[in-house]
Image (cartoon, rainbow, N blue to C red; front, side, top):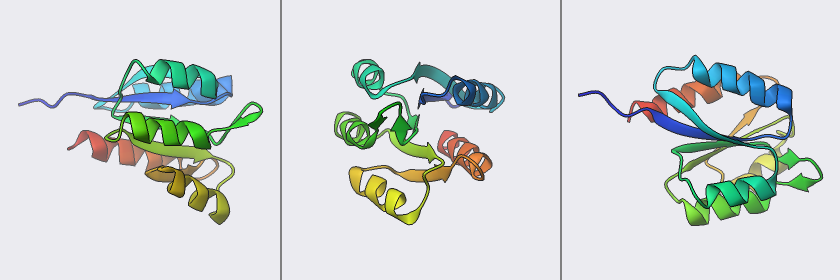
Length: 125
């Protein structure tokens, strides 16, 4: 029996980072990118309509921080894995976003491969 691919949404304001993630996710077996958002407002509106298996979220989106979005996602979709992906990866940010409900935290500069591996493991379940 073949398992369904795991669906992923990306919330990232940088077009270059979204493109990189789009490429990486398209090359990852068992994972399908279903939505991309550039802002908290776009993500809040879009995520009211879909419930992907995982959401990759940047901390800083333009002039806004995504903490309220993380809280919204976990309230609206408690089974969705929220994965923070940011250059702001110090202990204080990690703790604040864990308290907001984030399930995992990955540094953009050094933890992209572990993040993709976590998505693959999610797809294995």
